[in-house]
Length: 414
Image (cartoon, rainbow, N blue to C red; front, side, top):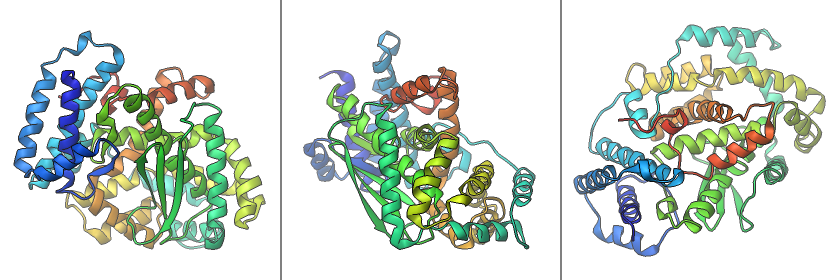
């Protein structure tokens, strides 16, 4: 066994050990049962986990990765970054306090930009000029969107059609494992809107939360983000390319609070526009999804014009989380911020603050991750004018162990 393979097994046991202290930490595990059994038997306390992680990290850092081929070097950098984040999470579980930005850097290898109220207020005012009715912009936005809710009894057929189309479009561009599959469940009582639970064997369980109304745009968003070419495709390709073909067992475990999540969420969000670029999305939804949902297809173009403008408010959620988790505002003020500047309904804003409680600075992985992935793909030549290059580079990214700092052309945080 090579040094890296041995340390990879140490890393797996440490991730599983942290999971005994943090129920959200292990997002997926489909590796050898004996490794999980050993971790469960040891029941390591946090200080022992930290000590072993420091030892493994120190040993990794003695390896000279300049002589490694590109993929092995990326593997080495990945293990270093993941262990650094594991140590930071252990410290947090042990009581260490960090600011929002310190935490996101320690866990996700990145810091989101900061925007003031004026930035979002200007966008909200511009969007408001496009909305009918009277009242505040959040009130008019919420009233406008009521017309585009997918009826609960039609939700499954709409989502099934969106998944089928996203899968077809992805398979035309990326070779997916022949045995890949997933099932869908509709759940309630969650702080998130949807979740992909990867089970191994190229199979996922996708859960969709039906606590709150689901708007028509979410069908394609979730089909692409959770399925193709998002989380399901990403995890299936990592299993096929890295675990099965290369024997890199560390990719059989997914530590949620780690740099891997910025890549996972960033590629999943960027993948939406990969599968449904520009007007192609509007045409598909107008011709296929709007009728299935019982909505008026003639209103699709207007809806997506408003929807496109609202995307400029993506970072408003980060600001609410940053201020809330830094103790600058309380829950009610965070929810109010989300209503005023992210244009959430009051109910959805309250749900989102529960997400902040549970997942904290994880929120940066969606918007900052998407922007970082976009810049990286375009820096490799994958601009909109060259869709084949765009898909090629995207496929390479979701099949490799690259860190967020690696998207920027750097080789580590410290």
